[in-house]
Length: 202
Image (cartoon, rainbow, N blue to C red; front, side):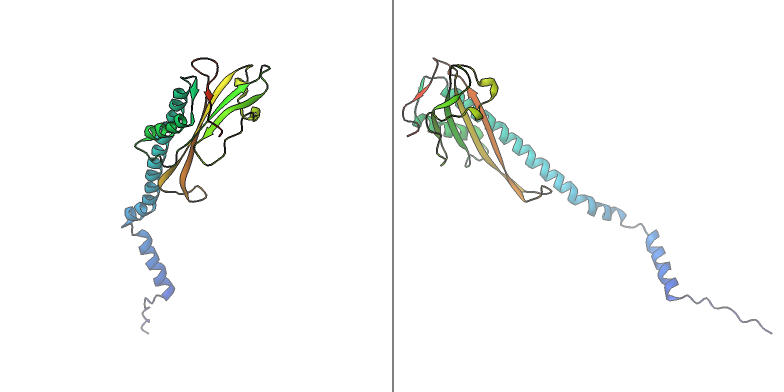
């Protein structure tokens, strides 16, 4: 009797597994796939680095503006609202070439009592819409402990500026599109023991 020849019939599942095996061994285009995964991360890192570099540069200028404007004020024995308003323009010019549209400054003269345990406002002026503290306001809680020296007199400068990013910063928990920068400085008068401002707080 002649034996019956076996036919090589493959089930659909066998053919499907074979196709998966071919696909698994095919490494064409692997580089393109890897690049597609890595490219967005690289773009985010690049944009983030640029944004933070610019923000650090702006922050440096904000610090410089606060220090220079206060230094100009403490070089005299008197000042006025007009002179203090000019300090906002000075700060804006120091921030160039970055935007100075959001810059705000505030100056407060502070006296310390003889015991060195209480600080009060001698005069104050702000460029924003917030009302400055009234003359005689107790601001002891706001003062650094190292500056609480008996009969001391200081002028405090506060400068703020909102830096707007070119684009939103991802992975911050929210759409971070701006950064509030601020600095505070204290200086003593260069000449005499105090600086007067007759039309401040009016």
